Structure formats: C-alpha cells, structure tokens
Image 1 (cartoon, one colour):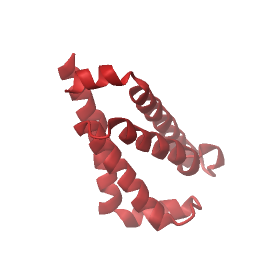
Image 2: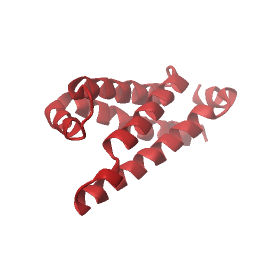
Image 3: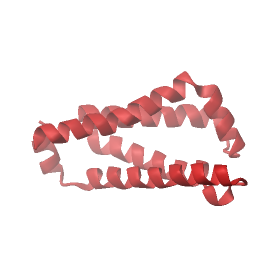
Length: 129
C-alpha cells in the first residue's frame, strides 16, 4: 500500500511540478492568455501561479509541508477554473469546449487535492514515512 501511495504522490505531484516549470519556461504565451481572459496583473499572476504549482507539486512528492502544499494546489485550481476556464463566457464553440474540459479537469484535481488534504494526518504520515 505504501508503494502505491508513493507512486501516486510522484505522479500527482509531478504533474504540478511540470506545470509550474512551464509557467517559467513559457511565460509569454501564458501571460498573453491571462491577458486575453482580462486577468488583472497577468505577468505577476503567471509567475505567482507557477510558484504555487511548483511548490504544491514538490510538497506532494516530497511530503514536506504536505497539507499546505495541497492547499496551494486547491487554491490555484479553483481560482484558475473560475477565472481562466470560464467556458460560459467563451465566444466560440472551440473555445467553449477547450475551456469546459480545463474547467472540469481543474475541479476534479481540486477535489482530489481536497481529499488528500483532509485525510487523517496520522494515516498520511504513517504511510509516507
């Protein structure tokens, strides 16, 4: 069971680490996208969200500040879902479809993060260490 939990942490957290790195490797495209969504301070938003993703994923993988890391991810995912992937405001069918898929993915990942964050701490630490 411990091995599967560790594998799950690496896969789940690794996804967010890679997303966070992408915010720093490709900021121009993400800043333009944030700007198109009328997000205030798009440049700062991209870098702050990239840091949240990276630290959240790193915390999940390493187990350091585990619950705090998961809350960083929950906050990012919910804010991003409603501010960046608000498909109900999309002007084209293609944009609506893409935003709806991203919105639903963010809600599902936020739900998984909430489940992990609210599991009993004793069990989490007994499995992790």
